[in-house]
Image (cartoon, rainbow, N blue to C red; front, side):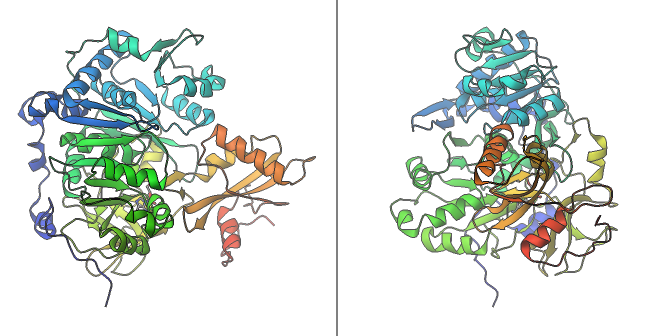
Length: 572
Ligand code: WT7
């Protein structure tokens, strides 16, 4: 018999089948103050609304520093701080629609900035603090960033590119600004200059509140715009999928530099008035378990690579901690192995609920729900109110068990509004009539469960981070010794995939371990610490098409010992 994990006894979504038939999006609107005539703004609904009711003194944020010290902020405090920050930004000269980047570690200032910027109608651009100066430059230049909010050590890191950022007017520094450029202002001073009573700017549903840079198989990362209209979908999925309830303490391990860390690390849970925990430090099995125990986390959203690392840390370690408060666990970002699901059942007696979605979808699309049977290895079924399918190139739905493109019927509330200054890229998602094409390959079983098969393109997923080979290749060829580079994702048991680079050298350079190390360091500091090739092969030439494009497909097939397929366009 096929392996399944029985449903939990209760869940916010009681009956999936019934909800699919009866659910209407308009029913979610009632949960927002704007349906009663108040301001329309994500920041208002996430924070200010709660500051006006009994949640005023409820903890909105437990921010755990890397050294373990905790800062707590209530919804009331967050409302005041973010109003101050929003109006302080306006006094600095910021305007509605400005792109304001937040390049900070997970500290309270990061959350104050995210809410503060959206409150004054800005488009917030969160940047993961692991990004290097070239990655920041690419994004800030593309978006025409007007302001960057950062900290002294991250400011130091981007000094080499600051002069290139022609639209940048101010740099807000969390900390001391001594010796910094004259565009620099103190975060503290922006707060002090602001009005604690400032009211959120009234926005339109199709106004963007956030720009998330994400990778495709060609070109540099593109700016995906999500709109204020994403609210209903982020709220209802926080209820149905994360199963959040009033007395929960919730921990999303994703950084707000990625969409999981904003849709479900900030906005969705806060629309419901949930207390969230944020941890500044990096992954460490013992620390993570102790955070779950110490904060009595009830709902936990994390990623397969982290779960595999925990699994690797051993069953004995699990036994040292008390997870009796943990009620619900979800995973996202890469395929969740059936083995990991079995491990969590065995060691913690917890079901792990896989969820599938993308930066571009803005919120959950295909998920497992508490009150539904889990089929380990399957991503689950579409959320009520959204239609997903597996289709061929013409848009015809594939029969059960047949591979095809994972697609969605356009028009779900949190669908991206567009790609910043790149309409052709946006259109590419809609080339199959009647569908949004995700770039993933999947099949659906007889009962409508979706199963992930892989990417239809060259996009790499390493430890859940989405990386385009082009970005890595571009960084590599800027190294003095590198002539050409071809980059692929190589399957890896722990990280899902690792970045592997094939490199030809410029005349006068010899392959060596030292050179590999130097190239690795070069990519880490310029692009991002996770984006470097963990494997480098020096080769004499790269397979190319007659028009000179590197055939990554051939590199990958050779690496994996698979047939290389059609080589008719290969140059030699
Ligand atoms: C890509 C989107 C928004 C969530 C975080 C990632 C892969 C995502 C799953 C899953 C297998 C998954 C897909 C997708 N992916 N979730 N449950 N099982 N693969 O967002 O960085 O925009 O990446 O992540 O390939 O297209 P993202």
